[in-house]
Image (cartoon, rainbow, N blue to C red):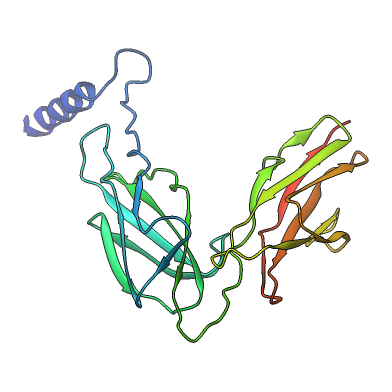
Length: 229
């Protein structure tokens, strides 16, 4: 009849052995490190239909085994996923459609299902011999930082964009208080920045449409910032 008490003492000892130095009595299990991407490179034009994605193994603070969530998307904000699955190894090979831009990223997960943040993304193309022109990659945000609160009415919008054909690009910029932004504030500009003077509003939404010489275009995600003047 003493077994339950003995079992209770054993369980209690196990719990206290997991306690930290002081206050909570529970050791926090930390997520693994964010994976570092290896291949393919950013903006790479890949020959052939098969692509091998690889990244460095992620270290876990508690030395638990780590698995990975690889995401491959057809758009830069990862709302149109071609692939999202768990991998026990730090590489994955698959066939992708030629002549289409893809975006990829990875996060790590330990045995307690703690996940790291996603790595930064990379953008790739698979070559298509039937195409004379590839559309630009999606514009990328520089400033204002997403969801930033600005204390000045002088606002500098900045972005970057890459074209695999190295064509000169032009940009249309949309900005408004509405979602999605529906007011065209600049069209056909060649520069990747725009100075504005804005009123204080709860939020501004904006996006950039990049176009090459052949009229092929790609849209940025919708970005937003706040003003508190």
